[in-house]
Length: 222
Image (cartoon, rainbow, N blue to C red; front, side, top):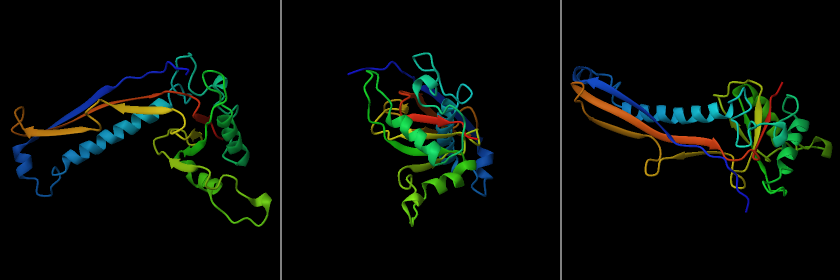
């Protein structure tokens, strides 16, 4: 069994809001009634933002791994040599790159393309290339219909860059974790001592990192 050296750590994010008693009494529209829920949603947004920031580090090449190379690198065999639009040819190249990846010990491993990850600007184009059709001839067959699932991430900063990712059940890739016993945002409230009212806080113990580069492929698009 070969072992990689990638690692990441969990960090803590927190936010506290104090609401005065006068504001609570005058809250006829219930604006603060679901504040705890909104803070939980904000924590979930923080998680998503952390994951995308990690993916787009180093000008879109991803974080630097233990081999001192970026996640998406020619030496890793997971980056298109030039940016091109989504098509049969480019999807085939991405799939081939994942299928021919080798493990740490140099042996060919099983890497099955699972998801096509795109920004909103490419959603319609991606849907066309993944659509199921009834072809009249073999030449009209869409080889990628039902082959991959479409994932649209609105936080991606590039309108052209797209990714193909492997089945996470087969190979590690982008991983995240919570502090044991504190899975997800922890929302707490109490009668205010610092303010004459109520205090609500949310604490998130969350960490993320890329464990392996072999399950991700990037094309800068065009």
